[in-house]
Image (tube, rainbow, N blue to C red; front, side, top):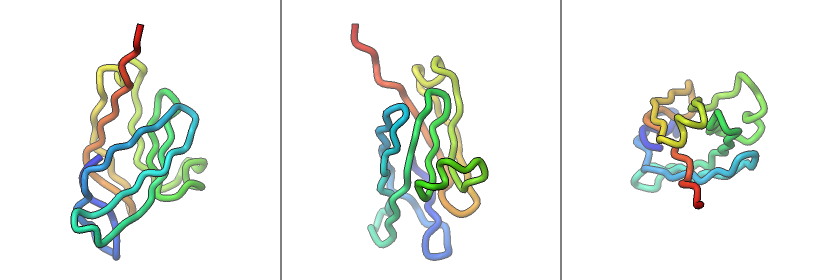
Length: 104
């Protein structure tokens, strides 16, 4: 994840953030500006088709929550799916999601 974080009433650059999410489990995601002045812990889930990144954990369950979502098929995610996400009051910018390689 890259782009911008809404903090202190303004859009601020977001330091690149890596997200590791297991299907069905909510994961905390620390987001910060490059200078470290603004920090926020977001929450992410993945259900096999949608990666959701929300400002608060309770917004994950709300369809109208201020969340960034990247939607694709298993094939899309296995090839690496990239898109631009934009929320009204949380984050905006590029988001890329890859499924880990399966071992044989």
